[in-house]
View (cartoon, each protein chain N blue to C red):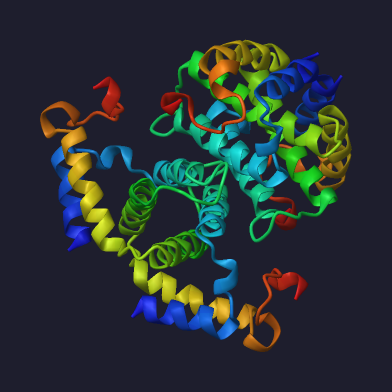
Length: 102
Length: 102
Length: 102
Length: 102
């Protein structure tokens, strides 16, 4: 349903011409920066502002996935399987160490 | 179902201690940079690599949403309503101009 | 001298063909993400690693400036004048508030 | 001279309390995102806007270097030596391939 709404929003504005994968990847970084700005000087951030910026990042992620024929939940679950292997519970429990230094 | 899997993955590793909203916002930016790297020098990127990096961005977005009690699809739809108002079809059609210059 | 070295490095490899302003802007974001990764889970970071990633960000900044005919120290000083006006000492002292909310 | 100006600017506003290395690293990513935004939908960007955003990235880079006792030009030259080794002219000439795939 989200995807249908996003597609309609883009189609109504004839914006798919701007949504090349590279432009969408840039947009994700731009919006991730705006989200990070909410936490720039301290760890407390305004929930409403964070919610809006997070929504922007997610929206461009969904548009990129759709453009590439990928399904968001599917690729998340697939990647999670890989991450489980890279970070086995026995080694990674309670540690934030990167896998190549575990 | 994705959310349940993510929660279990984090709980098994006792990683929620690292997942402050600020750290998750940083993580989203870090992964957005890795996604962008796939398009650094040209617009063609390897689909498998893009899929993995996009999954990482999405995963941290979902973890941040969950941490803050937000539901991803809900905040996307809510933001979409605001964006519809900022970019009315009559003005924004076929143009990539930012709303404050439309 | 740094600039001369950078130019020679790029020329020897025939890389200026890849260094469009847009590609360099992407590169700055990519490297900024790698720098941020050093602080992803905590505020203590390895100095040698931070130094290398910071050098990468700076290098792409210098390459972009050079490409656009800008001089790094000049544009920094020029922007500083603007920021002084946006953040007058009397209002901004000891506060991290953004100028539009001061 | 740039450094002296930056230090005075920060001291006058009593802002060094906010300038932890982690906060400065976040700031670099935030500003890199604003720079990238100038190239979000196409490769032509307004020179004045790019100059300002690039100045912001550079300023935070200089502040981070200063905070960590690093000298910008020194670390750039040091890193350049490493990059020369990673990308020998004979292999890297005219190619944008990452070193681990050269």
